[in-house]
Image 1 (cartoon, rainbow, N blue to C red):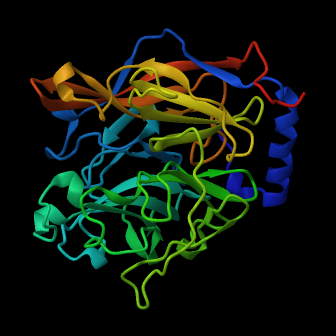
Image 2: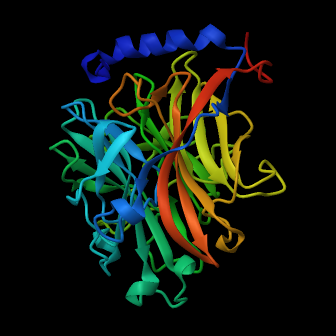
Length: 394
C-alpha cells in the first residue's frame, strides 16, 4: 500500500529525505531503457471523447483519495485519464477545466492546459496551468503570426473534489512577464510549461521556462512555496534566495518590474519532469531538446541530476529522436517526457525507485503535417554512475 506523505509532519519527512543524500554522494544515477516492449496507454484516434483530446503536454499525475490514478496530459479542453494504476488508464469524458478562447488577456481564459498537480489528501488538488494567449486569433496582434503573438503565463487553479472540477485561484497568476500581451510582440513571451511540483519535505518546487525580456535572460527558473494551495506563496529563485514575486500585470497597479529570476543551467528548453531517486535522494530532471552546437549534440530527450535543485550536472542523452520542436517533414516525432513510478510513496509521483516508466507522446506525421498522437511508456532502469561526477563530495 502506498503511504500518504501528507500525514507525516514536514520536519520528519525533511529529516528522512536529508538522510538519503549522503548514502551515495559520489555517484549520480544513470538512466537507461530496460529493453522491455513499449506499452500504449492512450491512442487519441480510438480513445478520444472529441478530436481535441490529444496528448499535448507532459503528463501530470496524482493518486486521489480513493486510490485511483488521475493523469492530465491532453489538450486545452482538460480531461483526465483515470484508472487503477498508471498502466491502465481510460479517458474520463467529463471536462475538468475548459478553455474559453477569450479575447480578453486579463481574463486568462484563452487556452489553458493543466501542467502540474499537487495534493496531500487526494481531495483538494492544486494545479499549475500553462495559459496561452494568442493575439493573432483575436486581432490583438499586428504581426498576425502564431509565434510572434503568443503570450504565456503560469496560473493556479484548485479542485475540491479530487480533480474532477477546477476553478481559478485568487490570485490566479503564479508567473508572468511584467507587461501585457500588447508589449514586445514579435516573438513568444512570458513563462511557459511549468514542470511537475516536487517536495523536499520542507518546501515545494517547480521549474518554468521564460523567453525573457529586457533585464530578464532567457532560460529556466526555479520556484518555491511552503504551501502550493496558496497561489500567492510562490517565489522565484534570484540566485541567492527565493524572493521574486511575479504578479498579474493586469491587476490594479500592474506588476512592476521585478528583478530577474536566476537561470538554472543546463536547461535551454522547458523541463518536463523532476523526480527524486529513492535510492540516494538525487533529483533527476527530464526534458526534450533540439540539437545545437553546445550541450545537445542531437535532437531528443535529455536528463540531468542534482542534489539541491539549483546546481545540475551536464545534460545526458536519454533518447535520440526528432521532437515536437523539430520540422515534421522529417518523419515521426517524440515529445513531452515524464517519469512515473507506480511504487512512488507520495500522491503526486515525485519520487522514483530503480525501475520507473518514461511516458511520452509518439506523434505521427504525414507529409509536413502532424497526425495522430499516442501516449506510450517504456520501462527505465536507474543505476549508480560508475564514475563520480566532477566536483561531487565523497
